[in-house]
Image (cartoon, rainbow, N blue to C red; front, side, top):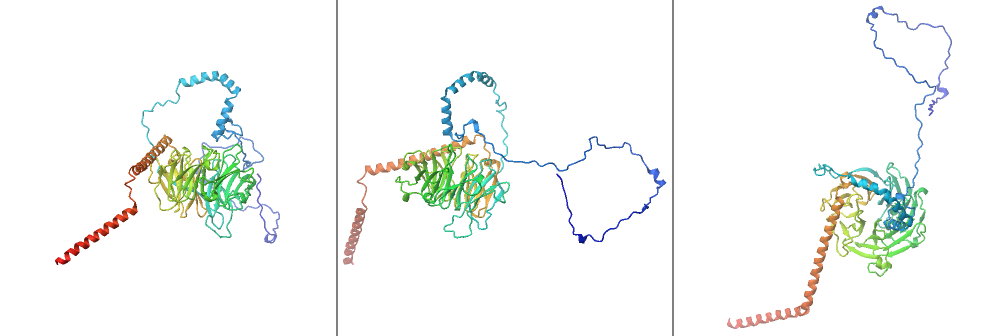
Length: 565
C-alpha cells in the first residue's frame, strides 16, 4: 500500500529566495587526539556482530494487504430432511418417516445393512466406555454463585418524542440482532410529531439502528420468522398486519386491507409452522383471532370470534390482550383476554364454537402475557393484575396450581427461561425485574433488580437464556446478562421440576374434589329435609306475633300492679 503525504503552503509565505554558490572546503571544527586517554583503552572481547543473510529487496512494504471479507449465507437442510418438511414440526417429520418406512427400498436397505452393522454393535456393547469408576465417591459441590444480572447494553429510541418499547424479538441466528416495536398505547395521544418507525438493532452497533421499519401505523408487536430469518411480521395500532423482507429495505412488502383487518390494536401476532413458512395469525382486543398467509394478504384465511358463550357473536366476544403459540403443539394456542380469563383454543375443531376448548379464570384484570413452558408444553404462565400464575391443561376446571404473591405494583409482562424449566421472569410497573426459581424459592424471587425508574412493558430472553431484553415506557431497551446459575441447567433439574408440577397438580385436584364433595353433601342435605327450610316471610310474621304477645303480657302485668299501689 503506497502512503503519500502532501504539504500545502502559499507561495507568498515562502519568504526571500535562497541563492546558493560553490566555494572551497574549510574546517569548521578540529578535535586533536589526546595521548593520555590511550591508557584507558580496553579492547572488547568477545564482540557481537550482526549480519543479514537474506537477500536484500529493492522494495519493502510495512503495511499488509487488507483482506476483503464478505458475508454469505449457507442453506443447510438439517438431518437430510427434504425442503418441504420443517424439522421443528413434529407432525410433519413423523408423517415423512412413516412414508419412508413404507417404501420397499427402505426395507431392503435395512435388511442389507443390518448384517453389516450388527458386528459393530456387538463390539460397542462388549465394553461400557461410559462406565464411571469413581461413582461412589462424593462429588465436591462447587460453591454456587449468588444470583445476579448486569447491564451490558442500552438501546434508546432515536426520536425526540419518546414512545413505549411494546415488544422485543430476537434474531433466530444466534441472536446477533434484535427487533423492537415502538408505539404509544396512551388513549388519544395527540402528539403530532410522533414517529411511526420501529427498528432492528445490531448488538455490535447499538447507537444507530441497522434497519428502520416504516409502517403506516405504529407497531404494537413484532416477530421474526424462525424458518425464514429475513421475514419480519408486525401488528399495527390500527389493526393491520404487515410483513417485511429485510433484504428489500424498510418499506413493507405487503399489508392487510384496513376493512378486513382488526378493528383494535393487534396485541399478539406470530408465525405458524408450515411447509412454506408463510402462515401467521394475529389477535386483537376487538375479539377476533385471524389467520393469514403472506402470499395472499388480501383477506384472512380463517377467523375465530372469542365468544365463550359459543354463540359466535362479535358483540359478546372477549378482547385478546395476549397470544401464545408453541411449535410442540401445532394445533393449539392460548389467548389472554382483557377480562382476566385465558382461553385454550384448538384450530383443528370443525366449527368456530368448538375451537374454544377450555377457559381458565383467575386474574382480576387484563392478562398481559401468557406463555407455555418450553419443557412442559401443557404448563403455561400468565401475568396480570398483581400476580403471575402457573396453570396446567390437565386440570381444566380448577384454579392455577402455583402463583406468586400479590405485589404492590402491577405486573406488566413475563416469560419463561428457555434453558431452565422452573425459572421465569416478571416485569413490574415500578421498573423492577423479578427472576423466580420455583425449585428453590416460591414465596420470594431469587433475584429482584431495579432496571429503570419507568415501568417495564416488555421482556424477551435469548434462546440460550444468557441475555434478557427489557423494554420500558420511554422506549429504552436494556440488555441484561444473567449470572450462570440462572441460565445453566443443573443435574436432574427437569425431573425435579416435573415432579413439582405433578405434585401441585395433584394437590389442586384433591382440593377441587373436596370442594365438589362438600357442594354435593349440601345439596343432598337440602333435598332430604325440604320441610325444615323456613320461608323468610313466615319467620318475619312469627317474630312479629311474638313481639306483640310480649308487649301485651307486659301491659297486663303492669295493669295488675297499679291497683295494688
